[in-house]
Length: 109
Image (cartoon, rainbow, N blue to C red):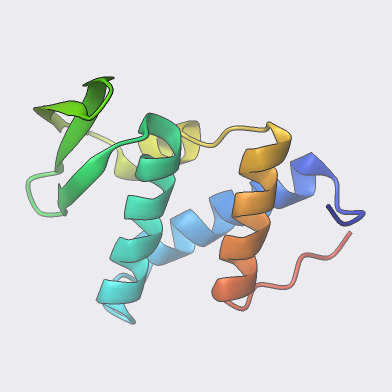
């Protein structure tokens, strides 16, 4: 892990999430991939589908080895929800740092 503080990395990912939702039309597919990656990392979910108009999220959550159950839930504030899914453990921070690199975000310490 580089010398960037966990707070800086988390703040930059939060900024990226906010930017991606405000400017979703800039690169919808790329930003949807970002949102799905955050949810997949947090929930260990698969088959994630976000309906930005109805503000609902469909995903499959693990219930045991190789068994998943599908759920759908309404998300009144997608920005805050996605930001609340960020973890600060070392493995997650490394993942977020890679996300920032992928989206060409330079983290300034």
